[in-house]
Image (cartoon, rainbow, N blue to C red):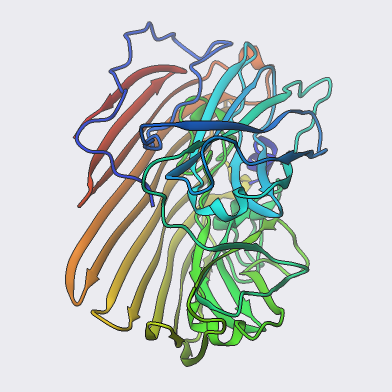
Length: 530
């Protein structure tokens, strides 16, 4: 684990029809015997943001060079010429860095609303460039007004770590004939409190939860109970759960995504070209707080708190900014309501340590929460029921000195949302599964090898009146195998590595399928199609 801390200092998608737009097989390139001083620019297999045709307007939101922990501050002004009811808004980050640098975590806020969270790739001595796109149409309410801008990618530049992170962030607005349906209000917490409009009829919180900071919570999934001889300890072991509370009452639970940044698992050579899932576009956890609307709509501030279960007391390492997206009832000044069901099962968390020449910690955990409530709207009474069920199942093995360190883990986060009012009930069922299966070994010759597979999977089904109307299935799988010599100058590492990613998204709206492979930093495959 100590090796990992040294190596890393960080802390719905649109379906495309038939084949991948713009993708072509990678050109044949000579693969060197080992990594050199340069490699292919970072690439992910995730789909590009689909953009409508027609008129568009672009605004530069931030342009900065990050050398330390000084945030960029500026002012955003809405574009002219594309109206204020857009069909789509696309954020794009273009970055470049060269020299030597760790992975870094970054965020972008407009008017206190976090619209983007990311991490950075690690550069080659000769330099790399990369870009990230994100659909930010949901934040249209924020984007219609001038806002203060704050962006930070915390960085350290000195005689050893020379990489200055140079980024430019733009927003492109597509006018379109049919404006997108977006939340009426996008709110940030004020001193930990939330005041909603009194006519709110749907309230959704989103939390950009990341374990980071270079300490043990960056690798929370490897924590072990106190008696076990391992470099990262937590009394409850590796079980983590992100909870949100309203006025102290549990309002939502979720499994955090097990992010692996681009220095993770002791092996930067795994990530130079192909990052792990979600590393460049960190997705927020969503919690439907509509059952609490009757309480929140009284015009008073209410305390909203996010906490992470399992973090040792007094230990930092998690960041969890909150946005709240609200839909209002235009025909009613005050929407009233009530919570009708609130049932939280006891949280289960068993983490068992077995000593031996190969130490072992087996963890099983889980939690269930059901919350239901109604709001009386201008179009009738609407009842919202949210059920969420979480599980953790992991086996962690290691030897004395952590020269062998292995984890096989599966996390699930199942959620059902039932909205029942005038007309047929609408049900959305989401089944999320995250997997991590990896082993790091350090041989007597100081050759460190990491073999790792990561999985990000989700199945979503929507039904009206019991009849399925839409579905999608995501399978984003990363695999890597890289070896290098530690404790030597950079030019003596003799690193080799093969990495790949396949991103498959199928559903009622079409399909997308793309595969990438890199060998010794050379992109050898970029293939798409369904």
